[in-house]
Amino acid sequence: MLHTRVDFYLLSDTQPDALWRVACRLLEKAYLKGHRVFVACASKEDAEHLDELLWTFKDDSFIPHNLEGEGPEPPPPVHIGYQQEPARFNDILLNLTAEVPAFYSQFKRVIELVPTEEEQKVLSRLRYKTYKAKGCFIQTHHL
Image (tube, rainbow, N blue to C red; front, side):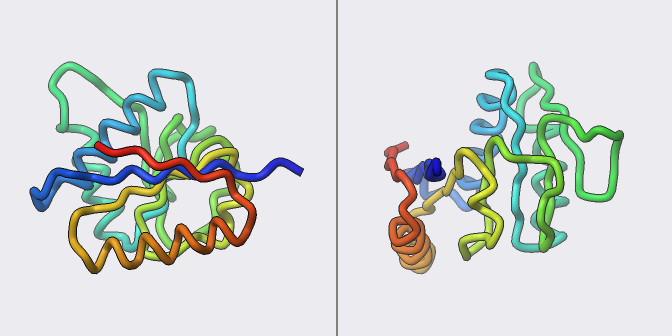
């Protein structure tokens, strides 16, 4: 049985939108490398915010994406959802929620972003412990 790889990205940028900008950069990188990514957002508002950012974060790039319930079939390489399990994705999960999604193990890789705010760091440490207890291979990256 293969264990999911989990990458924690520790953000150093203290700007309020740092998490969203890093999420866009990582999604662009994954897309350009041919990966399919499901983004788990905490709310419909967060999902819609990320959807808007992906249209505008860079003038010279485009990341094919759609929100849950919208867009073509089959879905584009980046699919943004909230409060539901992805049906057709098993490559990369970008988790933008406060908890470990129940469906994380169907993915080869999970990306977790760790903002600079102490409250968010505490939640990230809890997710780290959960993944470790489940036998995931964990790597940490400083940005």
